[in-house]
Length: 327
Length: 101
Image (cartoon, rainbow over all chains, first blue to last red; front, side, top):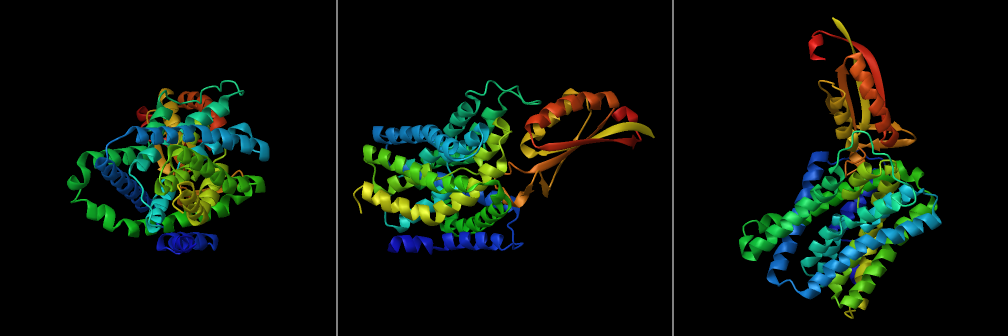
């Protein structure tokens, strides 16, 4: 309980709450858009580099490969479950249900970063390969969602002006994937010694930058919720709360089978529970343009992200400790 | 001065390259893309400040051309707007150098 309270009262979460509260009260405060994108790139570089350095300390084993494979399977399969729930409990049509499901199979790297900090605060140990798992989980969900959207709907006529390969470029070469995978590889190649000179920039400043970024995320989440809540029926909002818990429990079962430690279990649960609001919305505008962005963006950013950052992460850490027998 | 048609297309940012290809394939000699800040339409408010993915941002594409090229582009733009969020208008304009359009 102490850990949960100290996570909730950490500056990172409190700045998020400040931003969200300010936006809900219609404050005009804003973080300049270009600056905010720069912060996002910094965070992805820092987390990728840190993961790569950790990975360089240990050889790649069969166990690690199994965890990475499990992460990919989670990303492919969670949209199937999310789509089923959405189809059974909400009035969303097939396209909107598939687009929304894609967000829940993919991941939020900021939620992962916040969870990494909370795991550290809890005194748990995590390994760098979970960053690789995060990168691998960005895109498989999009493929499942496209399959779900087009299954039974016949083949759509090609959208005017579209070009072959544009979706693959967006999915595989979006900023999140390039920066995260690139920084991971750089950290892995250079190792702890090789990155000594850049580590002050990426470690000492990390917490402060994360506070600034979460202030902006709070503003985004609050404004998104204020502008988009009318698009969401109660059952859809409910999905934004229970789906992360369902995904986290599936991930917990996988971690139990793979015998992962509590820190890694908490992080994989968080990855499974998080919903994308950067990579997938952009891919959906190209792949499923008839889906309504205000539904999936409001749900992912305005409902699931605040839930995960405030309540979800402490819950996942507590369950991870029980699953790994470190409680 | 010479008469030409001006196309103004307000469309979601993620689709602007598709719109650009249509204009190029119709033989339009140029276009300019301008970012939009915020707006309201179809019951939704949107703002550049609320979407970190920038996927729901809108842009304005302006292009000027001869009537036949503009109408050729409009046929495809109509198809594009069947899938993507956007509005298109045309208006007559006067240009100084007709050979450029």
